[in-house]
Length: 228
Image (cartoon, rainbow, N blue to C red; front, side, top):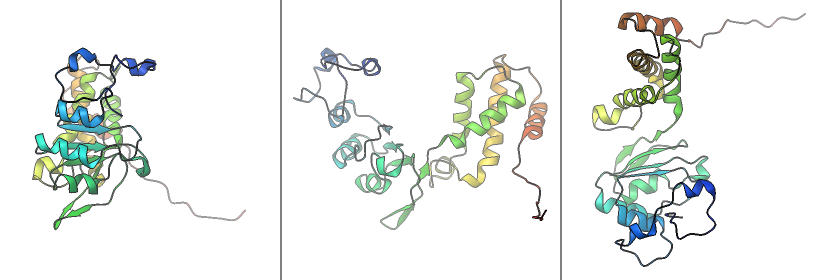
């Protein structure tokens, strides 16, 4: 698994969209005809590695250590599900980077303890985003969802990161905070929708009230079993 190039025959249509020209890679430090993921990491020197391959163990120790050589704080996100398909475990990633990596996963993982320090592993899941986006669209009456609205949702979520705010902790907030995070995302999404003209412009107070009015609470009636 590695880089797709125009020297490869029989590529599938979806692969062809990602092809790189071999002539642009002549300065790469490699003698391999087929460029592996390690070759890519060694030559491109990425700061972020995201796994959506479903290939367990794809992010090897050699690859992660090579990445860490040129990036003191690498971001590594093995997002494949289920845990049996994950590209690398948080335990290994943190061990190979001496605890320096920022890790989020697609599957749930228990906290990792390394050299006496505990690392809470955030599960990178759209459940942090889509409730707030939906609420923002409904509350503002937006006619469509724009790229800027999605970016506003992502940026708002980032502002609630314990790691960003406290210098430690998981990348994403705890699920117990999902309601307050969703309200903040909804407001940011609705505000951008109004600014872009895909929703009727109102005051901030009116938008906040619309968010409160449309906020769903998981409350149910008490039922009592009876016989007929």
